Image (tube, rainbow, N blue to C red; front, side, top):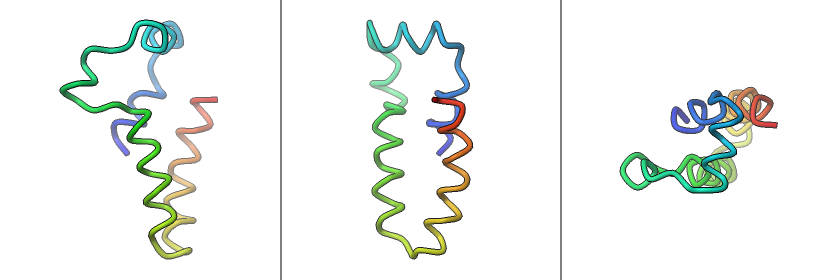
Length: 66
């Protein structure tokens, strides 16, 4: 969760740079896009109530991303 939240709060120009050129730090620290995909998988695996709670938390970060 932390990795995704930190990523979406980065300045737009840095996000675009990561998109075009990649980010060498992702090799050591994790890819935030893969972390977001993992969160989707977790939401499908947990109970519906927990998934709604997690969805609300993720939704705030996703709103910043879009």
